[in-house]
Length: 108
Picture (cartoon, rainbow, N blue to C red):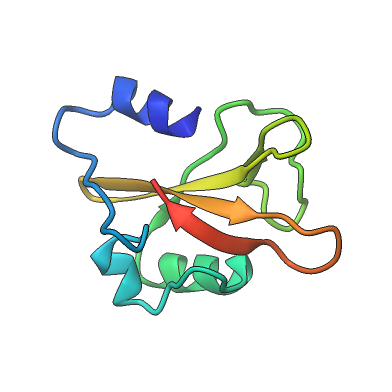
């Protein structure tokens, strides 16, 4: 939903495709990697000047510590969080687990 919304709102050419690993090169340079805890990824992104995007749905956050995280409905629902810096905008896909932290699954 966030990716579609970004495509409708952002000027043409502002979204850049992530590489084959699923993460933008600029994020990989910060040490962001698939499988790492979201809290670490968030800290690295914010520290490098990336702005956290508010979720599209609004309402009550799914996770109080990370109100930017938005989750779909259903058994195999995916969670995501959007980030923007200058003309670049990406979303992090996050893996949820019954026990343990949110983990980076990829980017869009």
